[in-house]
Image 1 (cartoon, helix red, strand yellow):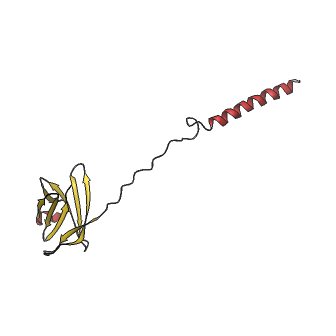
Image 2: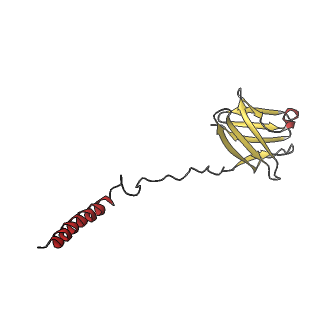
Image 3: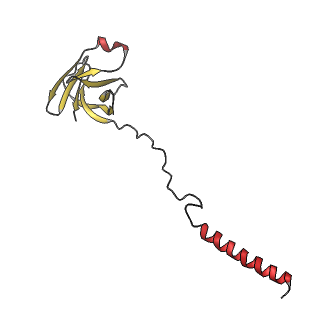
Length: 135
């Protein structure tokens, strides 16, 4: 066998070994493309409004026409966003065993009272009354 043939045989064998190694490495997660699952960024879940009984503008009868969205925050605890059918709303919190208004410059001008019975609270904000379930 001539010198050129020996070099060609040697290079072919090396090339075959390199190609086989590359084929094996392509399946190796450490050296190949990442096989770790990429977690999508957590998106906040939309708030879910729950119907609550209310008696608006001094009404005597209760009707399930209002809604509440309950949220919780490490600093201020449970919060309720109460919505009226006309688009009005009020944000309440629970401090010292009673409901307190958390929003608006006129919060000091509108009385908030609450009466707790078991796991339910009747909350009055001005002339509007709501029944909330406490957790």
